[in-house]
Amino acid sequence: MTAAVAAVDLGATSGRVMLGYVNHNELRLVPVSRFPNHPVPQADGLHWDLTGLYRHALDGLAAAFRQEPGLVSIGVDSWAVDYALLARGRTLGEPFHYRDERTAAGVQATEALVDRAELYAANGLQFLPFTTLYQLAADRISGRLDQADTFLLVPDLINFWLTGEQFAEKTNASTTGLLDPRTGRWNDTLIGRLALPRAVFPPLVDSGARVGALLPDVARQLGIPRKLTVHSVASHDTASAVVAIPAATADFAYISSGTWSLVGVELEHPVLTDAGRIANFTNEGGVDGRIRYLKNVMGLWLLNESVGAWEAASGDRVDLPQLLQQAAEVDRPVAVFDVNDDRFLPPGDMPARIEQLCRETGLPVPTGRAELVRSMMESLAAAYADAVAAAHRLTGKNVAIVHLVGGGSQNALLCQLTADRTGMPVIAGPVEATAIGNVLIQARAHGRLVGDLETLRALVLRSVSLTRYLPRTALHDTAQ
Image (cartoon, rainbow, N blue to C red; front, side):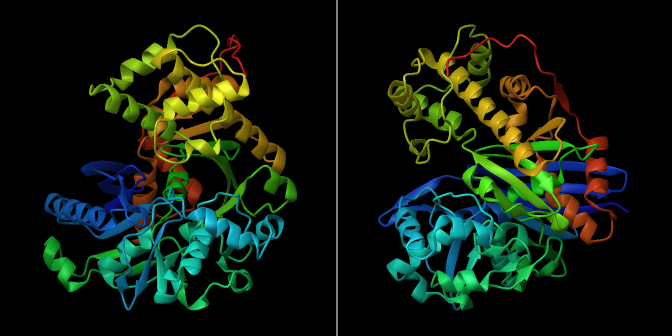
């Protein structure tokens, strides 16, 4: 029997609600609604409009039920690390955006208590200045944490608003820096060392666990029977995307390419070596106890912010497909720069920042939009290739093929350059990998699909259209 489920998939720049139809021989997604997601500057810093996102999600869920009255469950995934503080069930303001500058104080306060080497040994996470533990440290310093009795990561908060139940799903909890990668439990020793109140940490649940039924008021608002349940999924969007890797064998690396690009391999056990720490690789939780050993790369944020800057300056819409085609036709060497430079983290004029970095590092400054975009794509592909090679070196895992999923899989130039620079075939797709992973876990939780991750991936492989890019032997040199 086919399961009809709804996926609420919240990304860092947009959200969507999808209907998924799944059984052992069928995997089909039907888009229901899409909506933007933009940071909101407030007097105390940069925030998310999470109540607005929730309203969009509710509208989408109501539309999904009207379209499919046989809906059996809802699953929510989102970006990682950000959270809301709550007191007696009420949020203490909108969640801060991870790009807010307050995290610098949290880094300093944390490192005064635990150095980075000791921290990596305890949590296995790469250094990112916006990781949840640094944000919680900033809230501790400001006194905001004293007002709270719990904190909930973004998908867990949406689940709470839907059901009234407070839990933390493990894949997203693993990105906080406060989960023990060996046990999959909250690291009470580390929490104590960082002077964080243990009482604010909610109970942990696995992907696929039943969170609860819709609250009566929510059910009435949506026109959905209260018996409809909410299930946890791999609530970190990358964890859901990795579920949907259409891999036929185990010797793959993956790139989940969107606002951020997450590049890595899948392991059975964490790798907590000092070499991994120095290379800034992270051990995050995956479905069924797997480890996502990966590195964050700045991603298509560079391109998205550049397009926004050009449109704001000119007042004209940028034709992105045409611009990418023009970039593909650039036949002269372009600068290959460090896409993970800290200056690229905040919103702003990305073209000017790239030009400044090139001048500072002696690289040729790109001339014109097409050359700048080609420089971005070459630089991203080079960062991808470096991360894939490092993942193999640090883990010993054989890698023979690269799966590139998410929005970046539609970028033919980026996919081809990635094949060229890795020297491996790149399989592009599916675009909606996160939503697919979300609905697969729900269907398995309902017993409409039985099997391990390899079984789920085999269904994806049979069900979606993919594009294969082979490395070209004559890749022209680029300036580095």
